[in-house]
Amino acid sequence: MSTTVYDNQHLLEQAIDLKPPVLPPHIPLKVAIAAMNEAIASCVLIAFERQPIGILTEHDVVQITASEMPLAGLTISEVMTQQDI
Image 1 (spheres, rainbow, N blue to C red):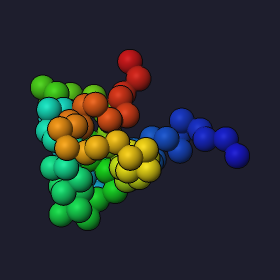
Image 2: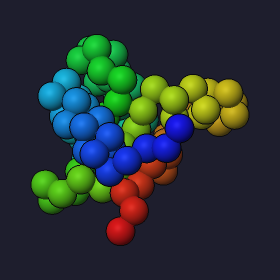
Image 3: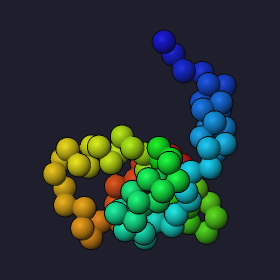
Image 4: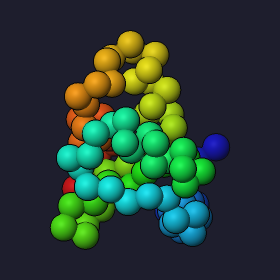
């Protein structure tokens, strides 16, 4: 099953409607995870100077945890999925 541009736009609009937390890239990963939990959100949008630069999703957190990477000291910019330019 292929994904169309419309589907991607629709998914983006749905994610924005959920109002996920928006955080700067220097925030510690643990703070971002706590923000996701508090907002009952499945992702955090990362922005720099009011421009989106990436996303951190529940799936990213699962992958990081499974890799046994220590969370202490990591920032979201080190593990986020970056926006393609």
